[in-house]
Amino acid sequence: AAGVIQSPRHLIKEKRETATLKCYPIPRHDTVYWYQQGPGQDPQFLISFYEKMQSDKGSIPDRFSAQQFSDYHSELNMSSLELGDSALYFCASRPLEGKNTEAFFGQGTRLTVV
Amino acid sequence: AQSVTQLDSQVPVFEEAPVELRCNYSSSVSVYLFWYVQYPNQGLQLLLKYLSGSTLVKGINGFEAEFNKSQTSFHLRKPSVHISDTAEYFCAVSDRGSFQKLVFGTGTRLLVSP
Image (cartoon, rainbow over all chains, first blue to last red; front, side):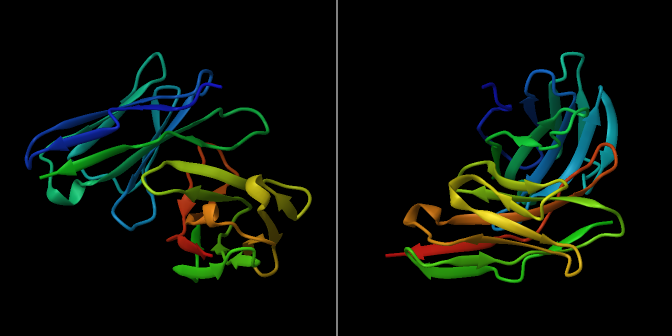
């Protein structure tokens, strides 16, 4: 079965650079969530999209922005990277309708800022 | 807003022994409850979920959890653990409204030794 695809799996950037993380949800899933998991931390919700519109916002820095495109894939853009942005970034998708409200997670993108 | 408390940051146990990982939640609205497992350098995998109905929920890999509304708990149990169960376990909650996002606990590291 198709899963949530995230790319790249690993990314190394220098301070003050920019990074773009991509998420391809499961087909027919119209809701996408982004989470940030710092070293030894629990995943923290960043932002979510439903039908290409932002649906909720969590602890996402102003340096970050995200969007969902017409094919439902989503991109998380991160600018002026800081060392503290080093983390595992997860994307999850779910269908809004139906009884199955489970969110399916991708493998994550590990961002290292040096 | 919801919150999740996982009281034990680490639970050491011997192989074939039973284990219980504790989870308590706080919410002013009805919720869905989840347990996820994360193996080293891996993504989040759903173990089980409580949406409604029977309060005893069975999941993958022999895990089960019981929803206790009066105690606002959703403890995870397994009668006999294996070395391969060594991982980080996250309890999560989401409200039943639209565009639910997951709020995670801080995680419990299960360490199974021979």
